[in-house]
Image (cartoon, rainbow, N blue to C red; front, side, top):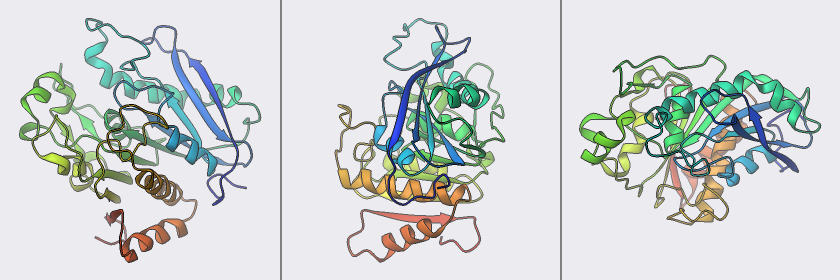
Length: 315
């Protein structure tokens, strides 16, 4: 079986923590690696957690993707509650930037991660790598395929993209800055002030809940669709009807912060993101086409799927 090619779930193996050298992390960057126990040419997905979470989170996504043929890598970023970073720690204002460095470190140390999982050596397809992230992690993920964020200290929106990344999946993540932000967000979350989506040209799927009312914006749930509407190129948007910020519970099987527990929404996110990853990484588009048809023809759909920028897609 080639990576991503199986419709039936495969048994998986998960190893944690693998520790990578990282100057900005005390004791190194802690990473979880999850893979199917069989299959070859496994495509790779880097998964960035939301604010405060860790490599322990997002198992409904990580396990599902791995069971369907992907290697999933989850770093624990500096803002994780498990690390207990002090409020006055000098690294705290730059956690947004260190997150991107964490993702690059993962890409730079795939050999280490491959060796950490029994039976994984020689089974990776390093030419097919996607990045995914939820909430704060969505901004992290977005920067690797081209999103630019104005540095709060210098004002420069540096290009932090990485050519090793083929596609992105951005889940319930931040939109535009400026007048879209609440006064609290503008003052306390400076990395949200000046995003530039016009450089995010790589293919991406944006997932948003139409009841995702966040305290960072004055625009309501529509704010989280900005990564789709404001970026050029091949983009798709899945809007979940009635879903809030955690999209039914993607953050964990027993995550207390889930505000809108809905297994059907989680199942839809699993289904659509898996089909999209296969499509965007060149592993076959039949599942993606079928998913679009299912939502379009359903008499009681859980969401809406739209696309732009690619030949033959709906708008």
